Image 1: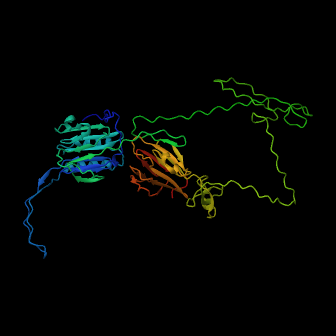
Image 2 (image 1 turned 90 degrees about the vertical axis):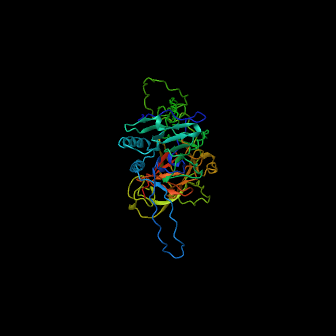
Image 3 (image 1 turned 120 degrees about the vertical axis):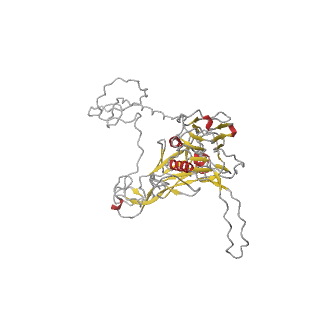
Length: 499
């Protein structure tokens, strides 16, 4: 069989490499026919089925119900799909690989089919494709074909090799084509697939399956200075995203004390005091650029006093006199303190004074039991409720509401300061301009899909698979829950417990 080395990527009319969209989010249309089309998570299979005529019709029985008319006329025998053990083995193999839980089962399916075809003497004709980390895998046997009519591309088993039993097989790794991919097992498709049809999962009869292309992502525009940018490299990206290193902090200007005299009162002025001691008063000195390899210098002798900053001591403003004991209090109203506009929540204080979620049994900061205190709710400033940890290691502290997307700064709520923008870059084009919101309500962190084109998937800790969010319906995030947006993924972590 052919080598597993991926070939050069397919290109569209512009010459740019094709974009790899999420496999399970692309529509699959089915053309009517006698074969079997099976769609599983990450796998699409078209397998040929042999038809056989049914036996002669049994003589019709006399009607047993009053009012149903005369005895029906026996129908002519019609062809029905024949039971084929190899077809069942092939479908079961694809189900087993898909159920393993991988989002890109193409390479594993490629190896499983290679082993299975070596043990089958007369395999059925089929065409199967599955998602890989950077494209698709194709396996064609017998009369199976894979075509991209818009690009004039066609693959058949004749372009592969012949097994020892005479079966023609082509197995190849390809990139995702920028146009519709047609798979068939050799039966002619007399009727085109309906444009509104979409096989999401299951097995249906058909002559061909059409895997639609995903829309190409738009080029990201310049990022405003006030927008937080998070770069999320896709796991299947062939070229890693460039990383921008923060500038090195400038070296602090050295402070060199300058000697000065003193006055009769002992202050830092020129002259000497009665005790004959000198009091240095540092003067501002221009900062010198640090030398590449400064030579060691001998430190001056310790001084009795010195200013910490380079400028002269500023005159201290006059203060009001201290109140006299027994005097009447002043009638002037005290100055109002600035109001704290940070969100307030009610919680339980641990013995160290840390505010915690009333549902937590341990303090999120010091770890002691909160049940040692009385269960009296105290209102205080809400602490950060957790972190978003992205798949490239970037973290975002959840201290206010966020808007996640490809262009979050274009939303009016971001411009008004109601939401903080969180820019998510995705090379697959699966992230919408305004994809999802993170809302903080009390002690809960809520995730809301704002009606994105490709949807938002979540998987609680320990869950066997992903589930899609209903648009505009909030879902509470729990510690360890994973979230997937297009080709990007992040996890929610919180120190406030797993309730």
